[in-house]
Image (tube, rainbow, N blue to C red; front, side):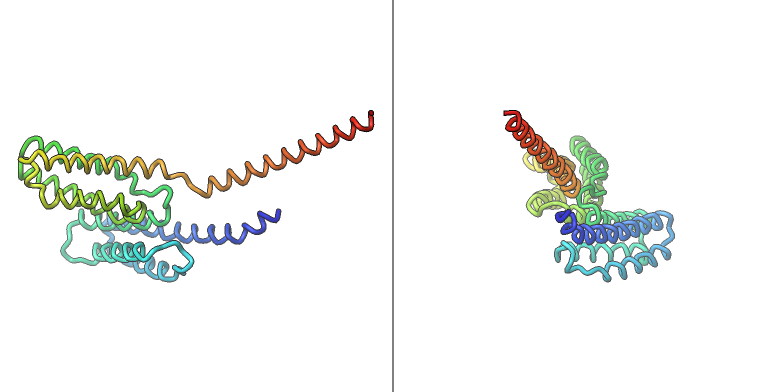
Length: 252
């Protein structure tokens, strides 16, 4: 009873914090849906609401780093641009709104981030990239590089929030190499190794995050309940043992 009473304030704060982020997450999803429906003014109003709610959060009580705050701010600005810019294609508007959606979700659902669902899209872009490279079509290969880079840039901010810096930096360096020297890869087989290395790193990244997606709070609940059951059974067993010992003494 004492343990549960002591843990209650912490659990209450965690629950309130989770509910708060859940609200922000739902708001970002509504923004994306409105952008897809080309209701840009309504999306802008929701972004204004998100800004007020986010600024009202006591960030000293959260686990957000300065890097996280910077990423959210920049992604928010790009999302706002997607609904206020006069000359921007609808595809680009949706891409920027999706980036914002993934960033907010990465903070709201650190154990099951939404960006994991982009694996199929990313790997498809990678396969098409390799296909155009094998055909040795420089123009088509450059086009596929640009398509891949757009997909990666959409996921990148959420990726940085969710994954440790060292692993992301390796992928970043390979992506930059692809962007800079992509045109030379078709003729240079040694450079092509970088593309296959990038594919391998992306596959490992998605797989690792999936494996690490177990919720610690669930583990804590399981350990707490399991520990309580074990203690109770041990106590009952010990009492029964003492009672048997007394019964033997009385019989003797």
